[in-house]
Image 1 (cartoon, rainbow, N blue to C red):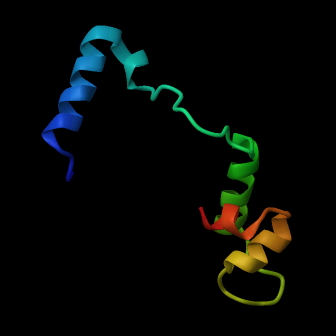
Image 2: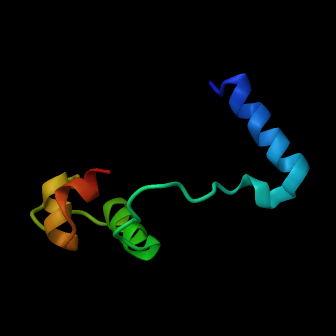
Amino acid sequence: MGLSNATVGKWRTRYRLQGIEGSHDKLRPGQPRTHADERVAEVINTALQTRPPDGSTHWSVRTMAKHTSVSKSTVHR
């Protein structure tokens, strides 16, 4: 799967010590997310299940951003 031995070792140790709860990543420092999980899911579902209203076959970053009222950089991420 292309994982390093260090990553696999870290996951195994977490599982051994904490069980399945150890598989969840801890919060990291930095600015909190600005969009809720539901909003992110809405953008993803829109991209996967609908077509743009202009008749195109695929959404562009710009058209998805305009359609969902989310910034272009957020859609791109």
